[in-house]
Amino acid sequence: MRDIARLDDYRLDDYRPDDHRSRPEGNPDAPSAVPPRDASERKPTPAPEPLWREALGERLRAHRTDRGETLTQTADRAGVSPQYLSEMERGLKEPSSEMIAAVAGALGLSLLDLVGDVARHLVASTGRATSSAPQLLATAA
Image 1 (cartoon, rainbow, N blue to C red):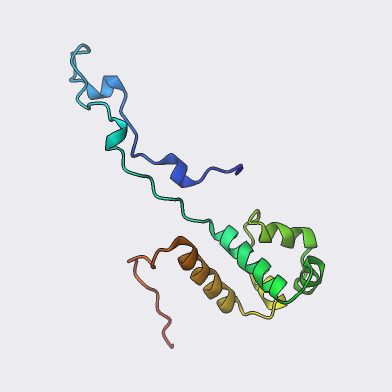
Image 2: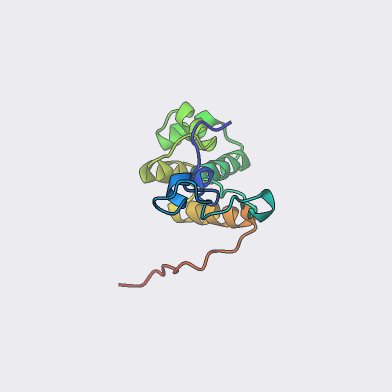
């Protein structure tokens, strides 16, 4: 069970204003301007997207185990404690970019390789294509 609620837990789809806000002013006995919603009107809530830290942790563990290494071996090379690396792999920590780069380097990966791998994993695991959000393109200076 998660200790931290996701933003998806606080959707406004089911928000209903208080009765005093939805009734015509000055007439508390008037019927509500907003009829109650029944269950058949509700839209299905999409599955929440995985958290970045969880996807990162899955990929870190996969790379470490593919190399046949223990937490201690990888953590020593990265300069972090085995406990911290374990928490990263379980998605419990929001590591800094420096920590991510250190662990990626200890696994023989560049930060770009690791981030790309996590992004591909997220696309594959959610079954969603990338969004229609603007793409950032690297340009030569």
